[in-house]
Amino acid sequence: MNPRRSRGVRLAAALLTASVTTIPFLAAPAHAQFGRIVYDPTNYAQNLLSASRALQQINNQITSLQNEAQMLINQARNLASLPHSSLQQLQQSVRRTQQLLGEAQRIAYNVQSIDQAFRTTYGNASMSASDQQLVAQARDRWQNTVGGLQDAMRVQAGVVGNIDTNRVQMSALVGQSQGATGALQATQAGNQLLALQAQQLADLTAVVAANGRAQALSEAERAAAAEQGREQRRRFLTPGSGYQPGNARMFPNSGN
Image (tube, rainbow, N blue to C red):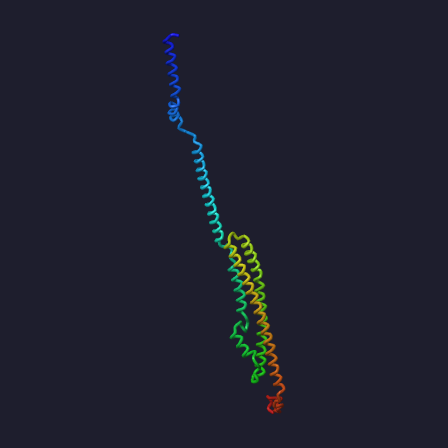
């Protein structure tokens, strides 16, 4: 072999060996220069976990806001007032019944008036009263009794007239109670139903009072009539002066 060629081969082999040996050191800078996006599994997992936690926090906040909004809606419903009110109709019914009671004839629903009537008209028959006075007192008592019976019937008619109004109000209130959107509306509907019941009890009380008054007047008239009958019987049986003769003129205009 040619000595020059042999030296050239050895030199080329040495250079090739040196190049292969220095490849790792040359590759590192090249990798750092052209490979900026480096996949790191640990860092990727941490970033994914952080993003998942942040998303969960956002979802929790959204759920909390939704719950608060629903709570405010429920509170608004609970505070909503009932759109229907039966107070005016119930008050009108009560006023009608009170007016009928206030129109009681002759002897009113008044303690002083009753005491005065029993001292004069329903008391013991006076021995000094004339027969005309006894008859007048009996007539007054009869008129009181008739007036009391009429008053009782008028109160009964007024209460019966309130039944239809009560029926309409009860139907409306039950409907409002069933369709109540909150606790306040349900409570108000219940309170108005209680007011309706109170009005009906007031009507019932008025009827009982009017009937009791009429019955009391009738019994008082009967008792006074019995007392007056005893007085009239006593007068009839008491001996009088008897018949006294007197002069009678058949023709008062005659000259004889």
